Image 1 (cartoon, rainbow, N blue to C red):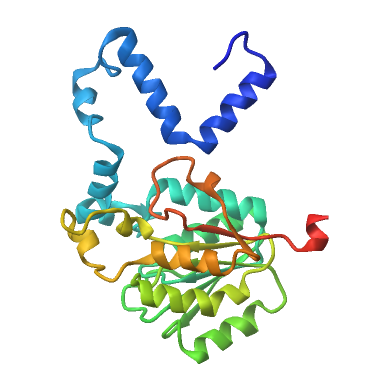
Image 2 (cartoon, rainbow, N blue to C red):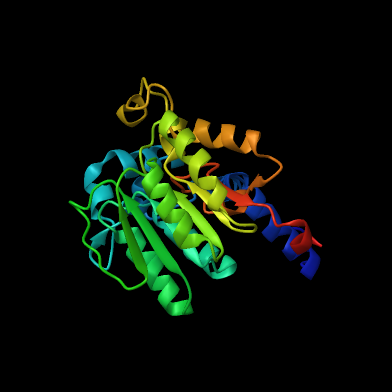
Length: 267
């Protein structure tokens, strides 16, 4: 923060934190250590908060006890909490008529988004999953399509359901690079101008497979390289929105892809 504090300097600081959250965190940490030793004075939390962000995120996903404990109204979501907060921000700001969730498992995230739509009085969830064996949700805003998301039958059903509205798509199905690449090619056509195509769980690609069993499970790569390739190939239509990663903790690195507004909307 520059001094004297003015509206302009305050805005500049806010924008800097949003654009470079990790660098801002490091600056605060370094200044705290320089002025009086350890930044955290409480001995219990000094130890608890001593891990790096990389170590914490890896533990969050690799320790199944942690992942399995995350729920929405009692239904498992298996999400990182900052991402769920970002989802409600996007839903409120963009007000999609339809949110296509590819991969729902227990249904916790579908229910969460349906409840957000309830509060706004707008929107429907199209839940696609190859099986409903573990699915525990029933809600009037959720339409369930059961089958292979890559099948022509499911794609055609989605097309018929969303043809009259604005559409956001979230990919949380098979996380292999090959499958994500295939699914993005199939479902990007439904995302309307100004809405988001979210590619989940690219976090697995951030880690060294020699050090992480989570990363080792994807020897040919996971969602992150698929998202990067998609963005490169569709740069005229899509843009990466890094402001959605301002909380630093995310399971979707470089996975918040926004379809650019149409020329009429931009003008």
